[in-house]
Length: 56
Image (tube, rainbow, N blue to C red; front, side):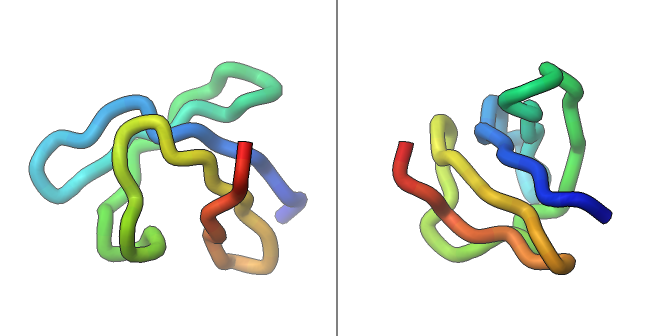
């Protein structure tokens, strides 16, 4: 899977909605799969099956 950059746009309970910065596609994912400290507005980089918080 190729790398993607996302922004956390919504958190509801144990799930987050990520929006792809380049395409606008949305992804609904469990919070436990994301790094600690994720909040609305956090930018993430996804590569090699791993999410990392990025500066942006």
